Image (tube, rainbow, N blue to C red; front, side):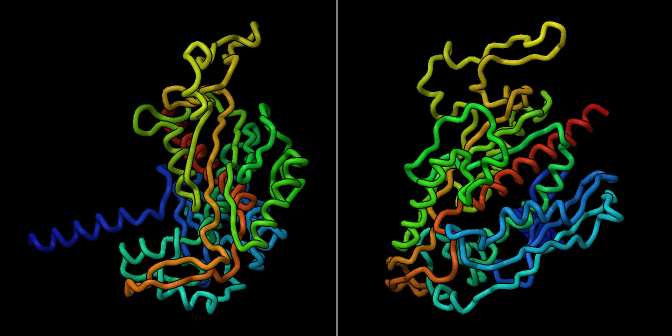
Length: 377
């Protein structure tokens, strides 16, 4: 009896550590590997009677899909989604929503060599250390192709947030090239005007040429994505451990290739005095009860709860780990070997990561909104 209890406890602990599900009320589980039959998501906790269509989800997936431009991977996937459950006649049923995207352009033979070694800065070694087995084709489960399910779920989350909330992300810097400081939210058409998704055209052109040069040299580059959300009510999020910025940080740092998160003034705030950093409350309209702050160094969050001011944060992305330059590494037998990256990879992940950042932000906020509504019932 004791042994059975211990075995069941081990199984329970293992299942809860897999990390494939995100959220508390609006719960998203993603599934699939890069070169498997399909990838996708299951969304649980979505309210009924919401208008959801494949076309709405496809719009966001098209912004994430590969093969968009000369600065993205040449893998040519249409990423056409199918809703398998949870939606009837264009309305959500309140039951689990399953969305899948079939993989159609795999070149698994490109990965025969890496099955025997650990690529620098990839998850090959850590997956072997944890599971003792991995799917080496395209990186398997550790591939950014997993984020298709996140973007699909994010499209549904945006519907929950409603038209009163405006959520946009854009590329602020690539390597050492940064756009001028943007105080206000840029227009969506300016963000999407170039394939690098930087709203400042002159800077965008410099970024594009820089990424092309890195690719031509067999290298890769990283950078920073900024995200801003306007129209949120005050009161979303919880104190202490479930602060809204903590949930956002976890969401953003769960995206492949992310290495940093900061909200509001972030690290720059450490070089300010309190008298400079404090956001002063005032009433912008004496005839209303609306409360605002003259600055937004807090990034729209106070005490872990949204203040009603714009939510403003940044996410840092490392250079793509797979590069076409020879590097030293170890084989699974611990022998010294050389490796040159094969397969089709982005020389810079940022342009295609913009809709992923938006999706994860929408998922966090939809979850918080549903939780707040439950509190008020």
